[in-house]
Length: 406
Image (cartoon, helix red, strand yellow):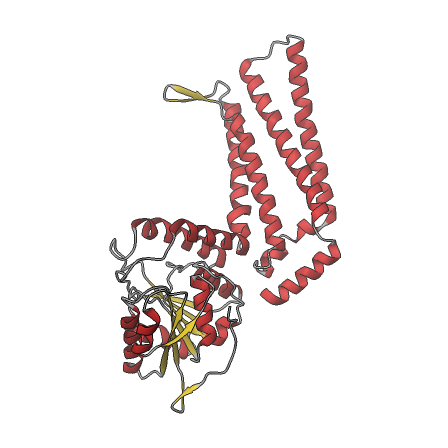
């Protein structure tokens, strides 16, 4: 794959290329020529010296030839994927500002000036053309419009700290080439859009969004809803583990404790319609998932090379051997308490001690919760101490990673 670079801009007819429009293309012969002409005409009307780069991402139709005839420069990228194609296009670009869009006529390329001018004038670093205000059932599937895009946008917004972001998945963006090449973007798929925003906010770049519209696509969509969604989620977990694992884990632990308190307050179980439910045993499940999520979030938060320096510092306690020993001792005591309570219930049963049914159920659930939670902490700390690098190596690794990401 062609690496992103920081080459100086070339010139056209003695003038600096202001804008490079990058269009990733996979079998878009029905629309790519129209997109190229629309982009070139819009830039010409605005007085911008422009080029259009169409990235042939393994096309098997006439897309490349039609793009050339329309005035585009075609570059090839063998590695499949939206992100790989965009990265190749940026690397091949000569403009001061790069505009990324699609070759399927969905983005209004006649409005490129609204994206480019704020970046050229230095008012923003990344300008995004949002889609949702103009999207409809013809231009965007129902699940993408009301579930997928809002959910991913929420995760990106919370992970990046951009309260005003409404459409993190818009692929219609403008940015200075040298600014984005310095971010070290590595995604090859649709998650490239999310990685750019999270990396940019880690560098405290200025990101602005403006509604520009969205049209019905020409040709067949290449988007794989579930596969691309999972790739996005994996990326966000690596970039912001505190958001996806640590905080949800805390929420599950709080819910478990609340349900346990509820089971104590209603020993005869909860009545739901004609059924009854004793929530005390469900507490064990929530506690294990909750503590497991928190521990996993802490590990990723400290060790993920994609996490920001601030996140790594927040979870640096996990590399402290003293903290690990204290967690192991805590887990051992908790597990021992659960075993002791279980043994006490067994002795009571053997001696036919009269214990109310609701009390036996509540105490059994508590014993199970203590045993599982304590064992989880013991096993985790033992495995981590065996698998994690030495404290010196970890510190060196964190220093190196911080110099790359922060």
